[in-house]
Length: 221
Image 1 (cartoon, rainbow, N blue to C red):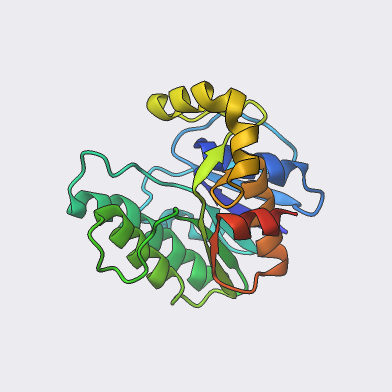
Image 2 (cartoon, helix red, strand yellow):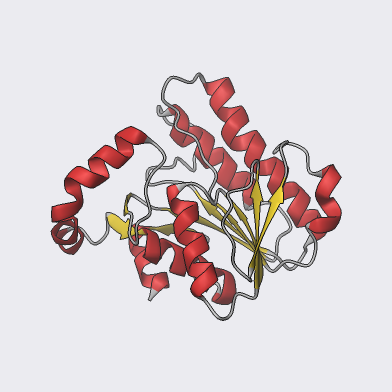
């Protein structure tokens, strides 16, 4: 499998990248970044690109891929709907429509979130926008597309959230997270499970296009 990754520096993206580098079936992973991270691995190539709304300058470098793992995202806190839509819907569809045109056999895996509103009509602004994003991704002519809706994600293997408040809670809850995960298996997953599930679904498919936390845990095994 040759894959493209968006969001490699975020908590979810770090987990996906780690599992891709460990998986012998993933031969090449291209990480689309605004600035180089400095991370090096024989299978990893970082492609620096600053405009995530226009890929015309690098289209020739985006062909021949089997999968795309899209884990870019922003918090809706403090944003109005227009700005959040631009940074969530417009940004995601700009990449996806380009990749769908260039790679008809690609499987596109998008990380959304628990509570996403597929009707696009609910009260929660972020959930409506995420729902519209999911719905329109599923209309694109990919070989397949899957929407991942994780709930609480436990970071493993030294992975940290770039959002200080989130990392504070992860650190505070870390001693009891194994117990919480055992008690609430449908609400909690890990960065390792999420990464493994995304690879497995891209490789083998899944019975339905939208995966909640329990589906993610099942797909990871």
